[in-house]
Length: 443
Image (cartoon, rainbow, N blue to C red):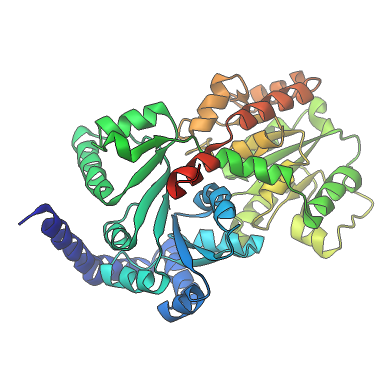
């Protein structure tokens, strides 16, 4: 049996396992797991049939498929999507693995074509690709699934965008790491071009995953382009938010605005504890939770009140046509998706959540707006966070007192810190044009 037949046999075996064992097991897990239930329910509500996709595809001369895990990967793909769709004859269709990606697109009211991924079964993917007939499939960062890759490779060129060294490298047992790298190396046989972020990533893919040099290209990270391009655009909604937060929301004696972006409960507790004390009365706070479910919003709302802070939900303020009463709340909690990037534009300093307990979220968004950035200690999952920290532009406090002291000491130099942070982000831009030229052979 040659390699081609062996790969096909393994794909078919994997598809049978997914169809008859793995997917039914997920359905059973949905009975006890809200997260799994949300994924299955979302696919039932937002699924698009192959007939619907084929009807859409007939209106275009070509189709490019993007496979994204969730909203973060979609944001990385967006600069490339914008460049491709300047040609009105090309359909860009985004496939999300996670339901949260679909929620993000709907919240932002983006017009891009999208659907949710089926189970990783060659038959299910075959129906999707037969409907879309893409000439190229672009995977953002790490969605490498056997049946998906095999089907995509039958239709056209397969590329990986923003590929990096796995975050867990060196943190697992030797046998588990060897197994993971062997599986990933095998999956990359279906890929034609891998756009890596840095030289270190290039070396890893060549030496550890045995990818030929001719299939690797150092391009940088399109994430930088996305945050910069968003920072340079304006909209009526953004103007309304800026006007409200800068001109109308004026709690007594406050001078500066701190935003907590993509925060979890641990981040909220640190920020609230840091805001105690006479020196911090000049600070007003926007909290943008990573999880905007009603239960989590209620928990954060209770935390602010328990510590004696006045707070209000953004949805309530918006429903009141952005009019506040005589007493302005010191804290506003954002209970809607899709607002964070715009809100960074009104801040004087930013705290990016996640790194207090797990991994940091996107530090580039506030950086692109020229806002000084801080976060918790677990930020090494993010190359851009590490780079910002190495450049002395990411502050990582030891505790609430340390963060409070930092805010006080930097109060007179925020504009200089912000400008340095903005320059750092802009100097890293340009990846999207490199990727576009490489994939489409443009000079």
